[in-house]
Image (cartoon, rainbow, N blue to C red; front, side, top):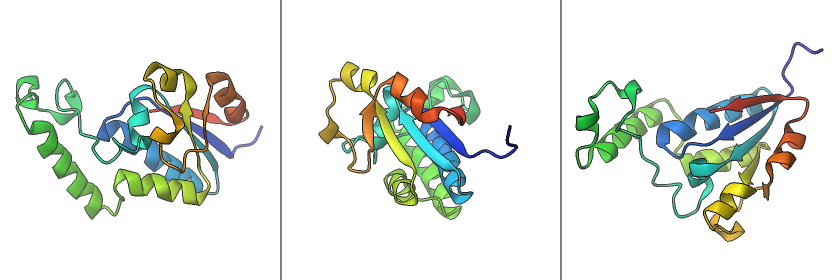
Length: 155
């Protein structure tokens, strides 16, 4: 068995700002190291590749213990937008691109992007709802075939 990772398949199931970025960073890191990367978007994670939604992902401010703010404060009107704006500024300072640009960068680097067929059907979505860089809409079984021989990362 090899000590090096040659392929990763990353599952993105959360559609929040902080739910999508870790997966994109992991996939980008893999591609920068010459590692094959597949990114499988399922459930609300599909918002990251949805043309109408991917520029509007927000930080989840209610019930997010990592923010260290009371739930009541997180639920105030405008709080999610404020925290998202702060996070976007910090990501920009660290030279991370916005989510749509990051996804384009990943596709251009050779990462393969897929949407989960069951989730697409559940949310009544169609191929045209997604970014052009989407490699395809695949079943879980097809995802496992793509992932075979590599590491699966769930974010």
